[in-house]
Image 1 (tube, rainbow, N blue to C red):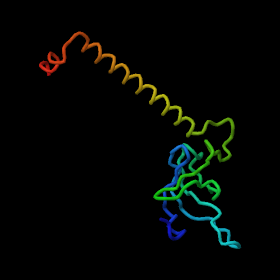
Image 2 (image 1 turned 180 degrees about the vertical axis):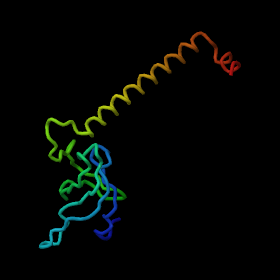
Image 3 (image 1 turned 60 degrees about the vertical axis):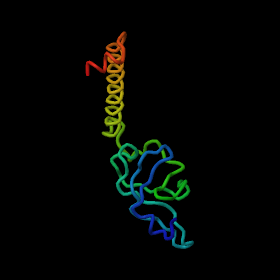
Length: 131
C-alpha cells in the first residue's frame, strides 16, 4: 500500500496493453492545490516514445497503483517532431522485430511439421528405443 507520494519515484509504469513505458523519475505537483498533476518519465521505451524523449503522463491517465503503475490510457506512439521525410529508428526497429517474430514462428512450425513427419507410423516405444 502506498503511504507517501514519494514512493511513486522509481516505480515501473506500464500501458493498459502491458507494455513497459519506463520508470517514474519525478512527480509533477500542482502547488496551489497540492495535488499530483502527473508523472515524469525521463527515459521512456523507444517503442512508445520517439527517441526516448522524456514525457509527462497526466494523473488522469493512471489506472492503478500497486507494486507497479498501470495506465488506463497511453497513445500508441508519441512522436517528438521528427521530419516526415525521415523514418524514425523506432519504426524501423519495430518492423525488424515483427519480421524476426514472423521468421521465428515459421521456423517453429517447420520444426513441428518435421517432428510429426519423423514420428509418423512409428510406435512411441520404437522412438524411445532409438533414443
